[in-house]
Image (cartoon, rainbow, N blue to C red; front, side, top):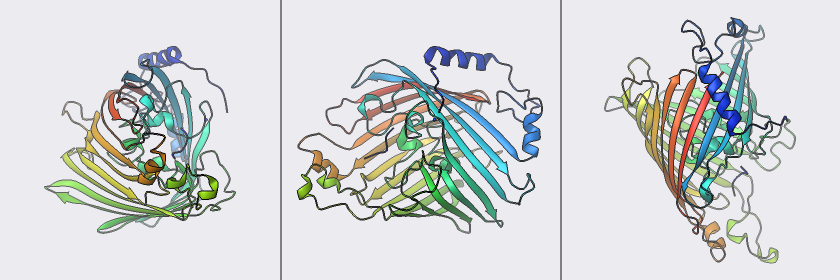
Length: 417
């Protein structure tokens, strides 16, 4: 129903992870004059600046999680897990090749004993431990694509694209569990038709009054694939998104409508447990429609687009073969809740995921399978520009009917090298 949740071996556990964090905290931070004050290792004695001048940008982040159940189904022990993200950009113009092009890569590695689905929940309590798909202790290049600027208003991405990276600029949703919320409902809102890593193209056009995004991509998850073999063999996905941004009560507000259609066939969720001779075959095609609204209640006058406010996202689908029939996520969050802490971030959100009625009916005689809902609250304290520390609480009513409510607490520490 959902994707399973990078080739060197690492045997880090909680003790060594804590040592790493202590060393990072005690290390000499980058000087205020450094062009990279948000990086622990600073300018590398000028090397980082020289590389940037030549078109090469290197970002390395290490994210650490300590999370567990305060109550719920399963053990109440807290476990440790982590991940490493390496992002490389190669600017074609600065490298003397052509103007407007950037080759971007995103390499990921996750490790540790921490479960992504504490308390038996279906919507992951820790997205950073769920993705990338596949096994722990493996390096995976989840993105390697060309970003090409076209004129003043358009840009094109083509290649292998980490779908979560497309949400990096959203002030409320996204973050992949490394920033903002941990729960998948907010960090990687499920649609049922967009895999974690895609091969395809994304065209973005800034217009007036709407900004448009058009996507064409293979419907299969391409996390572990590095060649476009069997491309589009199982179908094709097409997505169109329109965004309107304006002022409401003097504050920046936006509405985004996204529709995604796939020609990929899927199993009939209402016949999963029927004998093969009684099944009628796969269901043709699938679709998803999402509407997102955001409204800032307070904005930073020095940084347009920065602040905190209300957010809500509604989603609906065919419900079969798409297992996510409908969903609601909303709340309040952003940066600068306190005037004295303008760079701290926070969020309080509620989510409700309505799983396919056909799927629930087909499993009903054997398994109590209901919808899932929960709340999450987090606060991120910026100790240094390169060291955000997050406290997180979640309370989830799991979709599996015989599973008790999960009360989850966690700590996240991110070190930006």
